[in-house]
Image 1 (cartoon, rainbow, N blue to C red):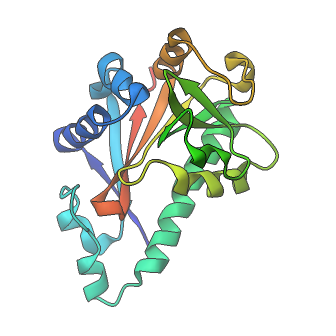
Image 2 (cartoon, rainbow, N blue to C red):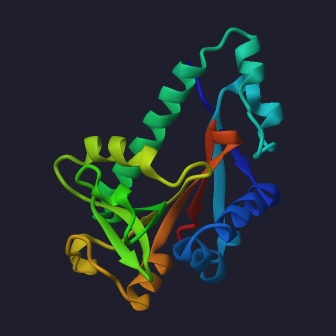
Length: 203
């Protein structure tokens, strides 16, 4: 199946700002500190759904399903594209991915599996760095992002820059660095059926 890239202006920016406002410290700080207007926003959806592309809060797949499309096939293609974006960014920039999750420092969810995370002001965030098992880790981490709408950031800071230690608590200075070096945002949209992607404009 094919997916079509759609670029948005004011309406896409308004949606992203609204979701960041409802997020945690990382998301809210991006909203306050980053010049989101200088970025580019797009999505990838089935061509049959283009007319509904700006209905960011609603399910988008009905026109695709009405023409015999397979939602599971679309979802797999979408997830593959998003995972590839995250993997390519981390590998090419030696950067990291930050996943906002609905968990605090004492949440039992942090004991499940072997995920890397850090704590700021009792808020927990999952984090991924460049490593040999990155493909599998992204596939495992992506569903762990906070329930729809997900908020994922891609930052150019490396594991060395952060001086990462497992389950560490970071200070506000490090959070600000993560915010200032965020080049991509991946925001859940379409009632869980897609994403909006913000990319910082390269100077």
